Length: 237
Image (tube, rainbow, N blue to C red; front, top):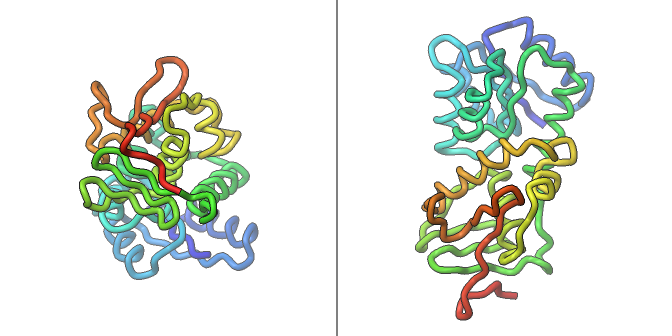
């Protein structure tokens, strides 16, 4: 596995590198000291995971993340001293898979990495993977392809896993805690802010108006419900 660390603090880069190599013996770590070189390194090395700081010279972590997400859905964890709620929301809205505030322990970092990689590797057995179509939205659960009006919809692994769970249970209200546990893991069961941010991102990519949604309905205080297809539209075996 290959991990890219982008941070202008060399002491953090060195400490995280040592920790990763001790935890995973076959880990390959590459690094960059600013967003500009980080972006170049990302596309040259194609890492399996990127650990990305926010405040850096020449290009911020926000800008690097934005550019990465234009072409790649590889997992990204933000590592930053900016712990304000709005900063976390901004990172998630730009496409980060998780957000870890400095200072952090190696144990917490390793747990977050394992959770992110687990989500990115979630697969659906082909024998239990029907396709789904409602209106202009179509989901092929075997190939993980999502299209809207015939055009591909680019989703991150976490976004896809959340959409999959909702669509496979169309018509049922799925509680917040259940969605968080199934998609993120038990340690995230109270992180409703994560869930709301991802639902917002999925709605935006599906062209769904949050005030008058066609696909994902909010059941206030309970959870979310994916609209059941009308009679001529169905989940196809």
